[in-house]
Image (cartoon, rainbow, N blue to C red):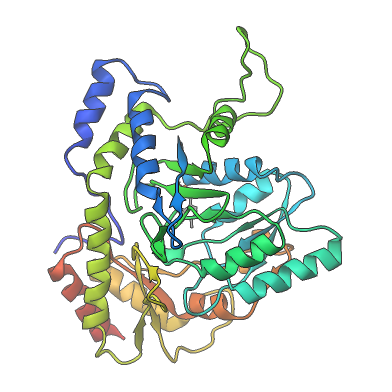
Length: 390
Ligand SMILES: Cc1ncc(COP(=O)(O)O)c(C=O)c1O
């Protein structure tokens, strides 16, 4: 059996056609017909009807990375030096790093056990405490859709709206996940997508910022192209970035959009198989949506090992690391769940509001292979490996 990876890229076969078109027409630049068409495809994909029947219509800017999208989202929300931004602690560092690029301070908020995403109650506690301690409101809230799982958006948005703090959703892992039928990434002011090589769809590397309207899209494009003012010569009045997606990568993205629904359906099928086939394995819990209104894309299926020994906060439990090592020897890639940001040495001085949930999940969780190249045979092999090495 070939090595089984967590999530490998999978091509539709259409990608080459769009790339060839780009070469044939010499659009080998970070703008062009593929970029425009990919943005239209993405806007159509994320737009639609909201839970109350209201139309959700978004614009999308294709960028060089999801991290660039987070950075530009923060800039659009006016985050700057001395500000605080509330950020989910249980995430990849790319969610938090751009807050620091802006000279702002991340304030980490822990997760709730059902979704593994931002705990609404703790969010409100954090907002109140930051206002009491600093005399000003946090500038933005950044929830994350970890492993594709929708967060408790009704509760989070209610709090954000009540305190009038804008939300920037990190939907890098949540492409195609829905909450009450509405696409993740479209609830807040801005939403972030990633098309890195391991994501639900890929452009090799790339990302996108979901924007509320055409005006904000124009502004994002302005910052993404070195903030060049509309003069016949080079005039700059703001600091800009070189963050646009290349027309070649966007060609890959157009090809990937033809199989986006199939990819999502496959990840959901993989999760269903793990759920069914690991049901009989004692001491292993597969994470599934806690509520029917959350339709996860199940980018990665994750498990928790129950009854692991408490080995401290800095590392996963010995049992998790042992199982990872043994599965690796069998040619199966797995990975512990994200190490929470409030435990990362680089963020040791950032304020954090914690409840033990992400620490426990980091201690006992493991991501399983879930991508388009994982079929029934691979799933059976992974499960056999787990059962024989627990
Ligand atoms: C939760 C999360 N946020 C942000 C990113 C950053 O995306 P990118 O790698 O496209 O910069 C990733 C993935 O890499 C991610 O998993």
